[in-house]
Image (cartoon, rainbow over all chains, first blue to last red; front, side, top):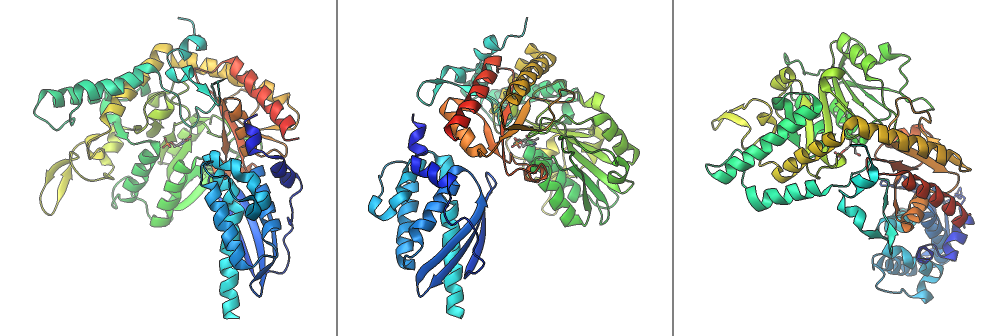
Length: 149
Length: 414
Ligand SMILES: Cc1ncc(COP(=O)(O)O)c(C=O)c1O
């Protein structure tokens, strides 16, 4: 079925068993993002130590694509240097906006490559990006804070 | 002529196309926008092909024809609503019509019947579409007026138990929807309009979800203003209607200023043409207005009561079919009393966006989300719903396909 390109096993797995979906009480930055077109919401807490992402935790309500995407994001980015995380983020956003024209680099994106099918469904790109945009926002805030400290 | 949706479908060319690799189109999203019959599509292009010129603005035959086409559409709309021709103002859509009212009211000087001062009250309800909430909410902020609202009961009806404390002697405006675009609830207007007039306030009806679906007479309802959108009434996009009582339109200040809405202009001042012209600056969406006239004639020929009866049949069937599905919860009234053809529901843990995507894969078009009524979905305790909405071209087979699709989705996401 055509739909299986969108709802890959990996996505449904993350949806049913979301990773790091419990807000950690300690964090450097906490953000709340909503998708105003569908009402999906996410809270995301981020901790950065010496330029390395030491923790990302989250909670939220949303469709399988948005929930799986943020779950995958946490597994992918925890432990990465912030600069590397940004490079992954850029590649992921490019993949989402590709309308299915590029396959994406599985070596870099790992499980997130399973979301490639989303790029053919324009209405769902925002779902897949919700957690990533929250992460980006949180990382900017966390870094601004660490400069002040 | 007996009502037959299969015959009606032939008037709508979109039903000839296939969806998602060869599937039949099951269009259950008329609450968002309706499909268009060929007569409407042809009327628009015929206007451009044969009569195009700036209406009310030319000394030539084409301008005369364009004016005639525009003005006869106006009288079609007036007849459709049971109002007078000069009481029909064309806007872009009902959103613009409601903003027109809110801005014009906000601009009314002291002494004008519409003048709002701090402490005056404006009444809406929790079930309003954002288009009939935000303009009033923001008007209240600009003027210091107080926004009040009717709450919604758990079964999706307006809570009218304390109508007298919601609509009071301080109330100036009551703006309510006729039918909820999310719940399908039809509001009992008689009591509300009477209370509004008893306290000397003005009643504004958002008829977006009623005028396309049932007979509506502004005279019988005794309301003061009404808005609806052409595109939800088998008409074109880009045209909405504001109807207002002649005496009130005469007193209401204009909202948009510019060409063709004036009586006289000097460098320092201007006076206004009589309504409806004072509310219609700029070259109007002529082809769309002409298309709307044809659309309403098309609906009239089929019969608004027949359309309403058909939608009742479909809705009743849909509610009974959907209620058989485990974990499916209808958000809104499940009895047919004062209920129209929009059915919202949740499906256990399955997110509406995923359900909508799954149904789309089978050619079934529904809407998912908060349906531009976010305070309402919050009040009903859900993040989002899936909505199926019906119109004259829907069939019982469409409902069977929906119910089957929902069951298949349950298996898929299990
Ligand atoms: C009840 C109601 N009011 C207002 C609107 C706004 O209509 P439009 O977008 O055509 O201005 C809608 C459309 O969804 C509606 O359902």
